[in-house]
Image (tube, rainbow, N blue to C red; front, side):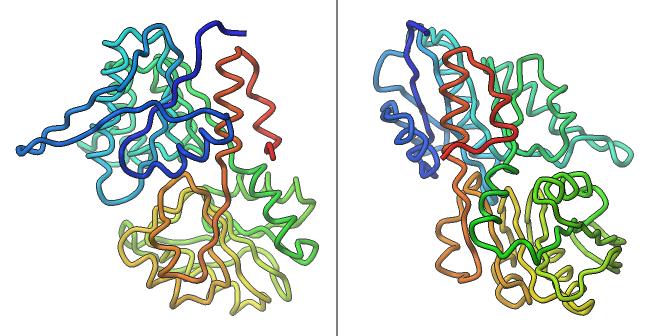
Length: 320
């Protein structure tokens, strides 16, 4: 058992997940103050000593002000480093810029690598994330990265809320086939695939279904939902092919742009997101939205890391 104690830090906005994690660990969030001066520069201070303590900074980054949240996080890490913390771990469930993980066209930056460099330069010793868009991002870091999975929590949700014996798992694109196949194996279900041909980024052109979904409850699984245009069109394709109903389950509900309008106007029965991304204010605007709480997974990961225990147990099991 470690002699030093856990200190949980969170930004002054979107503290919902941090408060749930703190409650599960039986701790309080370390008092801190983050404010902006008249020029917009960020000033951060920690309200108590963190010398030689085990720091965990919980940061929920959604859509909109991503860059502000990133800079706040870097300043918080650096403040802990200069305050002589023993170890600084960042809980970043939705890793920002994860989709810019490779050079997909000439002169394009690999911004996910830049994010990794900035976090380590600021003083981060360990990163915990969830369902990384591309798992090779772990190799961009010079510090350990633990990529947790929402799959065990999703399996529990499906078993508890859906008549899953009549269900089929759907991947909305070829890239997510491995994720869908893994989930289908755990539930002993079949899976189908939607092949899409994009015209431009964020614009879906033609969708082709590979597999039989007639008279089935279709569960679309993906790692993130942005504008939800893909999910809405996928629902139409599945229902046109004889599906009974369509439910979408995504890890990161970014829900930017016209996402709420697209969901409300779509033929989706439900869109279920984990609480890795703050979207509480959108729940009242969209009756089809539902949440899976992953705070138990993050809290258990923090406890195990602090005590030097293995966290691979969490890859297959979701704590209650």
